[in-house]
Image (cartoon, rainbow, N blue to C red; front, side):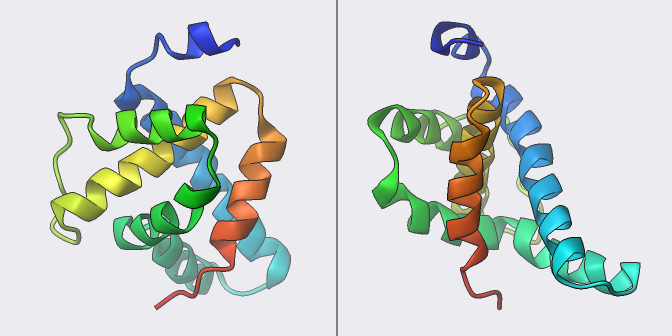
Length: 128
């Protein structure tokens, strides 16, 4: 899809798709790095897909984003209609939505190399 077509989607729709793209990358990375019981894999995956971790990732990648990517992140962050889960606060959740929105946007544009580049930077963030 071209930029004009992708921009027709709402930020929350892009985030819906981006959530699955991001989680797929997390799961793949975990499986390839360590063959362990599924229960452990799930625990490690949850730590990286939670809103508070994605909020940290927002901070880490923001300085290296293009103007276009920054605009998409802002659209995702400012999207309304989210119900914030109890495990998160509204600021973290909006920033996580922004990150997912960016991943959905890049995915629809076919920019898999850029997704991988950003994901590798995010992967290096220390997990609490």
